[in-house]
Image (cartoon, rainbow, N blue to C red):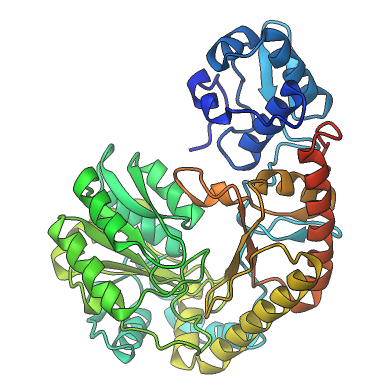
Length: 476
């Protein structure tokens, strides 16, 4: 996880080499260090190694390191105190543009760091119905540690309609999908055990893995799942579990086909790994591809995570686990220890939604599809050298840049009051330096302005990469 204090080991900085040869070495080192902050490898508040130690470790002159540190301090990316060393900061505050993955903007900022949108038009009616229902449950203690029966029945019914018969007792309701993942990991994974993950993947999952001190093993995900790569990783790592998003994957939008699900499920079963399947985006298909049955229809041992935060609204904090019977007691025990259940009112809202979800779901999917097409049109016009994918569902575009400059783009975008999360934040191995995620949840009317700011930021990032100036100070 991100550390807040203390000196980071100098050995981690060896990945910065070789420095670019098209600018002075000190400026290339400063740019590279700033990039580590932007993609999360170096935390705000972390103390850099001493100039002498870093120079020796990288084989650079001490003068080069001294000037690089000086450039960071002058541009607001670090502070230096006699006897205390050089400490990382972010200009304008303590918030790195790479770290927030929930909305947090103000003024005329545009936030592309979070794939979360406004509530659909029918949400207020759902809340009103839930409030009408609320007095009937006020006589209870208000605690439903595994979820109210009315909601668990509706969730089980939704699974059955997708081809996966489910008993309501298999469902554990949690305050959001991340809480559900935390329950699963605490129940199944001991500190130091290996968990297989895609690269890229959902950053919140990486934080959850770090919280249980699991050791993620990354398998590269490009245009499709590499089953041979998964087989090799399973053989090599001997994993305890695997975390997957097979339905409109976040951030790539990819959909794992039915045949591949069977093969990958069998592979994980043979390796003795429990599949933890995140279906948070599963309801967000655009109707352009046939969607397979849920993973657990193939793998009865799988733990499935669901949520209403994307298909309804993030303000309704309802997630859940669909548990295989053999693991139900272990997962319930951990749920009691970690969550004590979800909000009663939120559960009433969720049940009201699940009674008739079609209209709201259609509105959300239509909005996402329209945003996909508008993004692609604007980026083709303004940034024709960017490679923009065309997902058939999900929450985002996973855009390939012409060079490994995602962190530079994020810095330059901040100066344009645009928050962008660079690709390395989406992988345990901190790869994807040539990628950014662009959310489809941004209002369509804001996309032209966001694309214009992106184009200007890319131009500035290019000039910075060429060594024509120092580091930018970023107003946040």
